[in-house]
Image 1: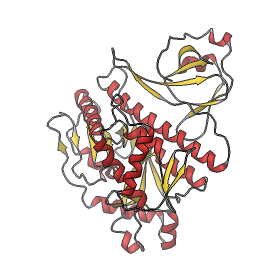
Image 2 (image 1 turned 30 degrees about the vertical axis):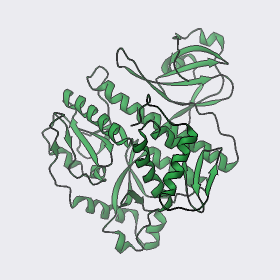
Image 3 (image 1 turned 120 degrees about the vertical axis):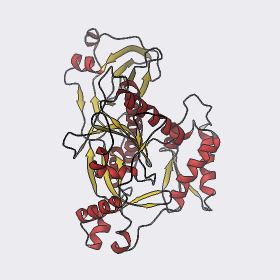
Length: 405
């Protein structure tokens, strides 16, 4: 994970690093640019978002940035292709786990005419889904519905084939972590570990205290601990954070738990006050921040493609108390134009250049009944049109705020 306190290259320097990574793939053509959206691409091909990669990678040491940018550049210049027939694809098709935001991104770009064929997906929880994909050297390639239809294959048939492929090596024993007691680590390490969520019975073979709780910090590492094992959950959160810090890539930072019927998965966090709560909530909040950042960039990209002005989308910040470790998500509502606020724990109110203070989300909703209107879609945002009047602010317990935003 990028270090927020590490020295960072300027945006111009980082852009040159992206260009160098693309050139190192052997690409000799001109670069295409969309300055308004911060996109850099290749002739007749796709593009990369400079702001997105800067946010994700700029805090890494130069050599690590180079390694990660090389992978992105390779996928841009030499995209993988699907097998030509179902007979060739069937032995290779797998189930991959996608965050819901990735599915939203595909759908938004498709509706705006920016590519991304429709793919088959099946929900795991509100925030996760399975997709059909084919693994290749640097990642996976999803299988479009139209490709399956052209072969006369139904999504259900393809799903069953993918599940069968996963089951061939599903019986390996889980590995108990010696450094993190109570935590079990997936044994496959093949980049598709998360796909084994399709087989809940694999998660009931360990001597856990309580229900299986799972974290997916990377595509080739799945962590499991028991829902009633306090120290096991603490250790799981620490190992997940360590995995993300070392890889520099956020995969899924939410915890899920196997339901009591041993058939389905549910989003889950321990209760407040639990020894693992703050650490797990911080990881979850980091994932929420990433979703909102990606969503904001997508809305701007689609608005530009349609020639319209997007609504203002404030950012979500993650604040951790240095004294207590308590985690809070914060967004900023500025007077003026209507805004679509991310769902946060608290809102900073700003009127012009003046910071009025910090209000808890629930308190603000009570003071402004009906004025924070939930919008359809994912991630959840609330439309805020009329900035609070002075008499409404008077009923709020506003806290001083000097943070960013």
